[in-house]
Image 1 (cartoon, rainbow, N blue to C red):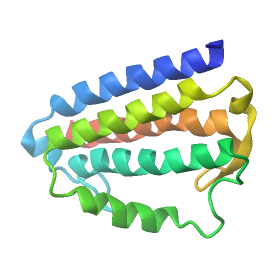
Image 2 (tube, rainbow, N blue to C red; image 1 turned 135 degrees about the horizontal axis):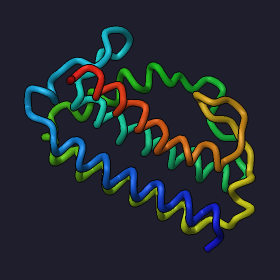
Image 3 (cartoon, rainbow, N blue to C red; image 1 turned 120 degrees about the vertical axis):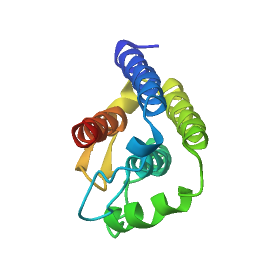
Image 4 (cartoon, helix red, strand yellow; image 1 turned 90 degrees about the horizontal axis):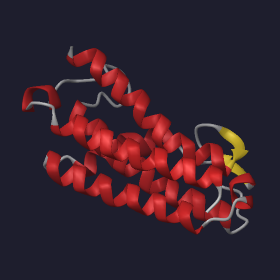
Length: 157
């Protein structure tokens, strides 16, 4: 495996471990705290569900770009996706969400392991970032989670 892929995989694995520890450390009261007051108005638990739904959708994006596709469709509405998909997991427990997140992240890692170094340079469209390289979109998987977790920490202090 090449250096960039090795570093990305290590970050994905580290982020997974840190996220699991973080969410397991939270009390039921903390998990029910509302993190956002506009848009999706997610609780802490729903943010974890968001990690699952959005990263699962990124698998489609990665595979599309890897097969010479253009990436996210122009009419993809990320806000609508976030509002509708996360709610579908509301009935799951935190442990069930953690298990699903673990499986989704393991799939992300498997996709990166199968890639070549050159694949990281492929370009396509991302619904949030616009046009860019596949490497940037994969790195966003763990950066995105860090941003949300920092926002959670601010509201539960």
